[in-house]
Length: 183
Image (cartoon, rainbow, N blue to C red; front, top):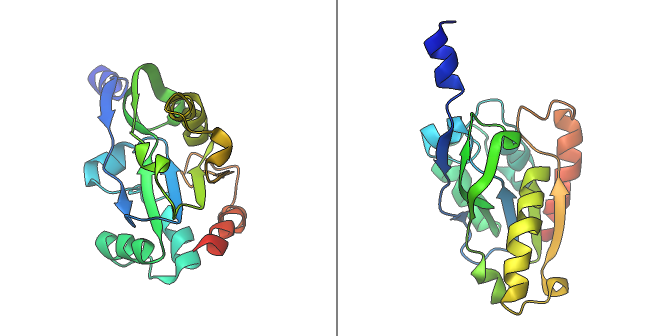
């Protein structure tokens, strides 16, 4: 590897996430932390080929994992699922959640949670999404007069990222099956 290639990989960039996709009136909100490099390049949630999110959801929701991104998102929408990320933008090196820099971090606006009557479950795709939601979003909602106990059920699920090699696909799927009872 050349010195330039090494320097390029270590460059801190501003990563900016996507708009929410899926159901506009969700019963389940699945939150990631911030899209990785592969997702940003493809402009699709969970685009890394080794990320197990779409395989897990295909099993739970019942679609072909090889279907188009648009069709997969439509299937989620039809089952009352919305995908989004907690972090709207942050500086980061690469794709790892551990590389997200908190100075300058901006979270998405979750004000729709104030009025949502349909939302029953917020499912965090990994520990970082849960951490950023609890650190930045819950206090903001509380300042707006939302009693945290009135928020929907929240659960941390094992990250579907290839970086989470400590869990097998079967272990991840077993825990993610909880979503089925909310759709």
